View 1 (cartoon, one colour):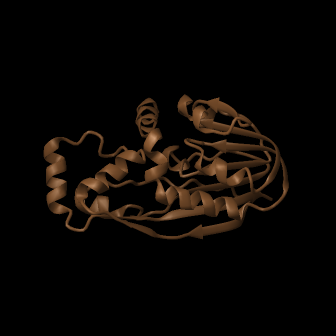
View 2 (cartoon, rainbow, N blue to C red):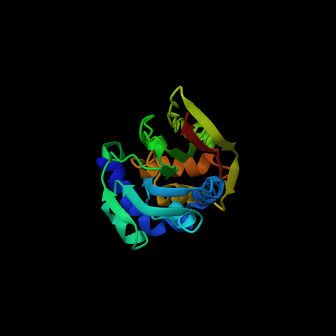
Amino acid sequence: MKLLQQRFEKSFDSYDTHAVVQKIMAQKLAAAIPQRNYGTVLEIGAGTGLLTREIMPRIKFQHYIANDLCEKSRDYLPADVDFIAGDAREVNIDADLVVSNAVVQWLDGWLPQTSGLLAFSTFAPGNLHELKELTGIALDYKLPALAADTEILYREEFEHKLIFETPMELLAHLKHTGVNSLARWTFADVKDFCARCTTPELTYKPLLLITERK
């Protein structure tokens, strides 16, 4: 987790510019959350606040708590948000609404437990399949398992393709959005990738879910 934290911290200042798909995911997820009066809202992996800024104007709540692995996240969030730094799996708060955008794929199948609503986005199998086809490196995110008594209130899966001018622009996009699978590439690896990547594009496969325990 320490390595993941360091790599995301380096991408904070450029993340919002490059995280085009993650922003769409945040907008869709926030728009789908049921209009209720929520006491406490807990956001897991708030990062630069993409989801935070989408949700806060849309729903009624009394207390908004945001968590992120990176302490730096605090500087990007609204002043009226309470912030908890650290591993999300160690945050023990039973909120009325738990939200998370493009984060749970990093948590090895873990999902926060809540007696309220859980609204989150992740990525479906086949996400960024171009990387696997060109490099053999697969971003095999483990989809979290839902409890047996979970009711799915909302589910959406879609594709969004990004087209880049050059292979180097594609690699820069991955770096600026925190994807770390290529972090140890050498100059020769990059040169070989650029030679083989004749169509520089990436296909994202977001998955959005809003659930509630029965």
